[in-house]
Image (cartoon, rainbow, N blue to C red; front, side, top):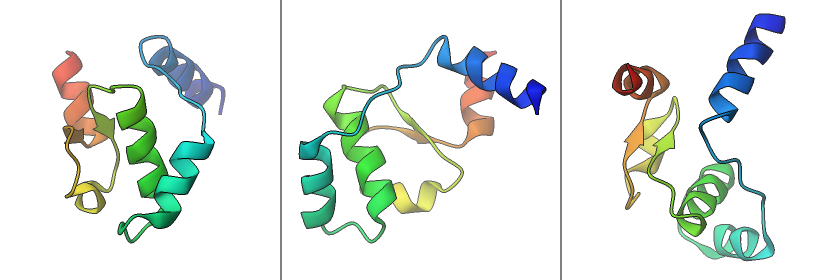
Length: 79
């Protein structure tokens, strides 16, 4: 478990972690995305001008206007 925490802290050192805002929640509840959590993550990413979204489930982000990568794809790009 400590190794996982160290890995997450390492990733957090070069990423931005954004908070959940009222605007994001309202948008996610009223949009046509099927999954509320995916919608909140997408809108949060848009609200901070994120370069990309990293997820294990790319198919849920087919409507995304920003690039979406799997963790493997993202880490491969980082090397």
